[in-house]
Image 1 (cartoon, helix red, strand yellow):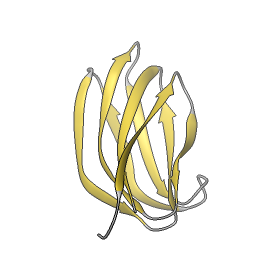
Image 2: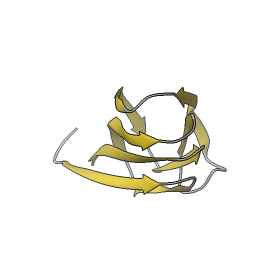
Image 3: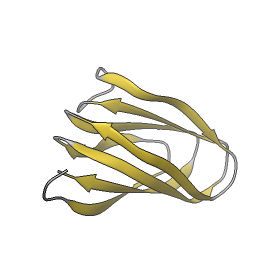
Length: 93
């Protein structure tokens, strides 16, 4: 993997966003709280038009979700559905 660094990004409420630009790996994410079932969908790219690398994950309780190093080549875009607060752990190349 070469030189890399770990970073964290928090998304709240219903929303979507770029977790990182460029190559990297999603290690895990922590659902801090949720008021309705939460869905997470991951794309390789900077928008929801990128390739889907992990289809919709439905979460009904707070806690850690291990992602086993999901690899992104062009960036990591996440789309959240429902209402909650999620912190993503990313290993950037």
